[in-house]
Image (tube, rainbow, N blue to C red; front, side):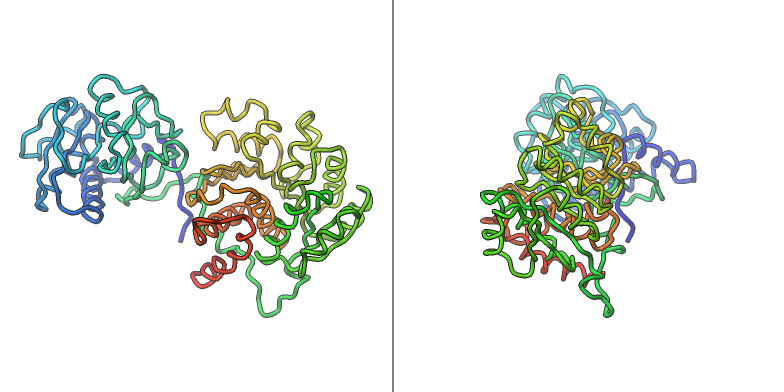
Length: 481
């Protein structure tokens, strides 16, 4: 199955125009879209009164079609319109509706509301009756079905332009837009259904993160595999009072398939680490030179979890960079370069992965997140600037490659909001990179598996649970290949 693309509003519009140029009329596309909305509603809601709120553009036209289809299926449908249609296709759809059309203002009946006021291309804040209705829908999202996006939400950013609706279900067409995957738009959309209306192939370098994107290149072992062939990874431990984070990363790497995982530990931390490790090996080091020599033959290295924001961590990162191993830099290994990010960027290459949360991202890329229209653009610019893969954490995690590819996690889990979960994620990434999985795809796969593990456990999850949950997710992936 092909990777699912995420398209900008302009790309979606271009796909629409291309389908029309190829011989499918706009009226036919609108009929398919409105019917898809009706199909999604009938699949999820019992028959009940439905009020369709139609705007003047093609979004409203989709609403007229949905209303007609629902009425034909026995639903009690009322249409309330903000204004008369202004596009040819919407006027055609309006003409096929045989019932009355009431003004938007006024009492709304019980039942569901179908929000077909404005779509993803809206570029100005809602005002007047539309704004009032959007506010009403925002407070009753459980009964709202949005066509394309909830009215008032910008399709390319997911940000409300002013008053904006919220929905329990959003039906969009051909592919998701950024508003469907980025917060706060993602939360306002509720469940998102992507309907195929026959727009044909499109090209994008932005994807939904899932097995369709990277599954064919996942590093499954074969009958001839042995531990050395499955990748050699090191994880650098912090001092004796801050060792747990590195152990979480090491266990994560081992569970996701790395053949040999070694925890490099300061001598004073050896005893505490040894007391908690079995299959993960342990090796002492005292200086950055010893670390560099010890890591000379490894495939990948994870450094940062509870490493300490110290000169020692900085020197250790630079030492690992000299080995040629692919680096996964997390937490303190990022923050330690806040005074001179270019020092870090100068030693990174395209195989390396940075995993900042927004605060750490700000330290390396000051002003970039706030100055970008949304997180996708920020992560892409950061990856280009750093010359490495950047995984910007959040409920809408974005993974970006310096070559312009990007993916957004759509399976984020609230159960991951617990101390140490990011350390396990760093280990998952490192374990996959060590197995020679391309770093962008490894970061995408790790982020998806990480969230699936959290959902598998649910309430009460702590980070120590995550590595042990990985085998169940991996088994499912293996069986579904």
